[in-house]
Length: 425
Image (tube, rainbow, N blue to C red; front, side, top):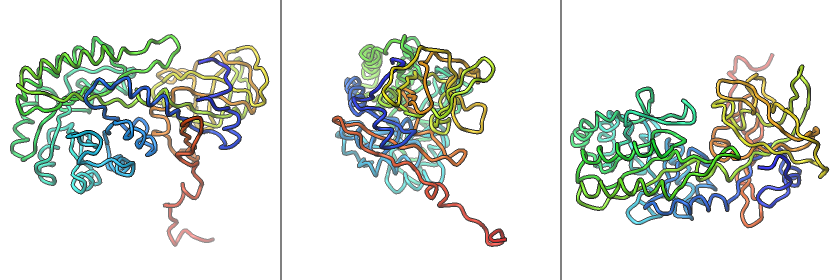
């Protein structure tokens, strides 16, 4: 991304900021639709909605033929409100919603039982529990193949230190538990973390083939999981989605030969579908020097976009001059937010190491844009420091529509109560 810009998705940044205030997330519908089209070779695209779960985005996915994964009762409710149905309305014979987790909490039990949602179980004891409240349930097993991969240790979802998935040596035990519980184990799912490369992908495909041969003819579906990376930095290349599919399709064909019938191949992207569609627009509210460091302080913090503080994640940054002037020469800048936390810095590396970024000389009132913020941006935002959740906008056909209004303090405080003996003087 250029360090100086004026528009996003064809719209003037300054005009959007004047109308909607800052900070705000701006999604470009066309980018999401393009990413969906790049994965159409798979039999089923199942969106991992935890990446960005606004019901407008879920509705867009549904209209593009994408089904969804839910990891909580709340995500089941979001999917239902966006028009999805557990029995399947998007693709013949394919459930619109699948619940994936490593445990059942009380809300999940109620939602799954009420709506008859298929489950992708991540722990063996879930099989027995599911048989008690949803006998006959269609079940896939999320397997931990014994290894993992990720751009951060916090995003690695495989291997012995990961809480996710059923350990691969327990597969036969799980098949036995399924028979005893009266549930239908018909699928396998494998996801080892974000940032998948082809060396690791080949290992995953091999592990899936071995597991599928153990399951045998009852197997009907395999899921490649997600983890498809996107180029957060300018010099990073794009993943070859055709090659990615070819590896999985080859594994699927080997599995079909072993089980004796056709097997559905699903993919479960989250980040890949939405990350690049969205930018976070925030305003520079203070510029100051601290010894030899120059700080641009903006009105978004890790309550708005937590990825840099949590993972040391990198986002390209651009500046938009508020008055349309030409920006000054680039200089070394630290970009930080308003929170009462030393870690509220957007230019940091994993482990909390603060670094600088080359950015144009700006003024208070200019706009700072954090790119590729669509995945785990709005979805992970919070009310820390009693700050309002940011506005979300979706651009369709050259028009920006509000898909989440900025919170008010009444929204934030509506469920808090003061005990009677603490009221008054």
